[in-house]
Amino acid sequence: MAKKVLFVNQEIIPYVPETEMSRMGKLLPEKTQNDGFEIRTFMPKWGNINERRGQLHEVIRLSGMNLIINDADHPLIIKVASIPTSRIQVYFIDNDDYFMKRAAMTTDDAGNEYADNGERAIFFARGVLETVKKLRWTPDIIHCQGWMSAVLPLYVKTAYHDEPSFANAKVVTSLFTSQLKGELGAQFKQNVVFKSATEDKLAVYDDKFDFMELGKLALDYSDAVVEASSDVNSDLLAYAKGKGMPVLNYPGEDFGSAYSKFYNELIPE
Image (cartoon, rainbow, N blue to C red; front, side, top):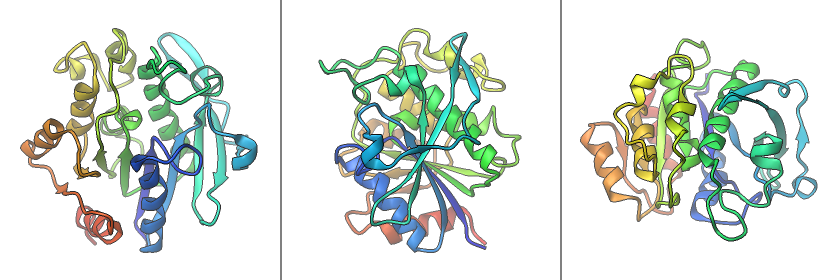
């Protein structure tokens, strides 16, 4: 039986501009699938994504749930599309206030980071996990790429740990170059709290949740880490290595086989 990998991506080409992260968002699932794994791929439905050009359409049976964040209901909308020239299907997490009505991704036209990026990351993480539950799909590995997915490891290991879909999943976090410049807001820790993702589990982190604190949170609840680029944050990489977790060092441009071997080592037969 094929092993299953869930990719939770911040960016994927061709839906958003090409970056190192968005290239990996497309190429890694492709290569993993070609190596015999069964995959599912998720990303946020950023406001700059052209739905008509990308041929996105809503999946009614997966949409309709409300997620409560910061004491407010936020409807979860699921859309799907297939990457041209590829057999990869992408699920998009959408919401009017968090994504659809924004003209860009994580910053406004002036380059300022959105003040509610923390809430958006929480919504994205919970939206992915709720949708995978509805799909009745059980991943062996959950691979998070990009800081927007950094809350998900915490939820997998706490709030969703008893869910059959995630009880045995191994979580992998990829480290990229620092992208988050500011902080996620004074209420971020309070808003993250959900079920058994309790306030006491967040007490070890600084109240000023920046890129470093978010990275530590992701690594603390991950089973393995990937050095996804040649210039990742050295402090976070050292933090991961200090925890003694499996590390895939930067494999270079010919990375497909290295990742597949790494996955197989995490989930042996």
